[in-house]
Image 1 (tube, rainbow, N blue to C red):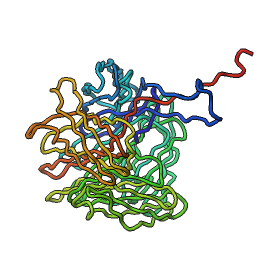
Image 2 (image 1 turned 45 degrees about the vertical axis):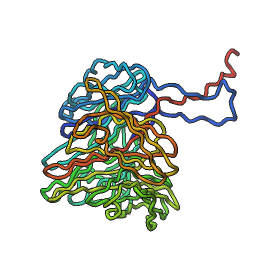
Image 3 (image 1 turned 60 degrees about the horizontal axis):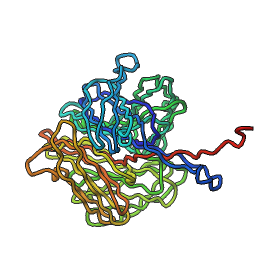
Image 4 (image 1 turned 90 degrees about the horizontal axis):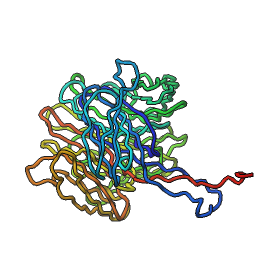
Length: 491
């Protein structure tokens, strides 16, 4: 989950995966304003630049390449620290020296190393700092590409995805980067109703340590999972990993993206066209049944599907395989009753028995510039940006950013996104034919609202490698609370 935070939050996540790529993104938070009448102009809340931010991410046990960037304006510095490995006591390793970032929009490579990663940004860099983890395993039981966008620690996280039925395993990784212990409750819902296991209550996460929860202990033999992770003490960073297998044949692996809390309208972005199965999952966490209206934003306009009944406390699914055979899609889910959650499971295939798993989650409308800090354009790998306009016509501007130690970036592009459509942009088309590059991109939009997701796909010799990442805005300013004089001061 990418949670909005004021500067100064700390935290870290880690999990054992193969060699990974980390990039960065953290938004700035907003503080609510109390409505006690209209305060004087001098007392009204305003905004200020974000000058500090900290991001946590599930880290690799093997060496990981870290890429950091910013959409901020001005100078700043980055600092990276790693928590110790799982085999060592849960204590912090000495932080790396601060790395200067002397120009806005630049991207720098950070040193390799093991352990859970905490990236801190100071100065203008903090406005667009963030972290993303990507790993690739080309063989073995966890063969596949997995990717996740990381964020700060918090007290609540939501996920739609995962399963513990035969051939599926899922792990919930909880990391506490603070110096005091944390307690966590894990609740949720599935295709057969709410989770009621006591094993999900009072899970302890040690100071500056992690706890990995095998979900079959909390939700045995459950499909179409949706989880709510909340702390009763302290703060944690949560990440959910799903692995599939068909006997001895790997069935894919991916991180399930964190989503926002339940809503009466949910947009699930990042559903690329292609062979394989596509399954929309809708969860009703409320006490009353509801009906949801389904609409697909395709490359040729909106398509309405039959409504879906969702019993109380239950997850249901609807296949989108036929609809996504020839068009990319963002799915709009509107509840006629209580708030719902939604996500989508994608199983990609080529010729042969190997399948690849990826999860798409609920998207948020872009409210400012978004950073795509690590876009590797090296055939046969392809990166596709899916842009959807759920309201009026919109325009998206893709601006490649300079990367320290690399050639000058190519020219940008402006993309029209007609109302109620999804537009797929193959990012390799930003380059001259036959060339390769590893880019950073800034995405800005105007006109109507836009939701976006990035699809990573490779046609490998042993089968497909696929993952989906949400694209999230990186606001550069944070609202500050109202300041009023103390009426008793000076008495």
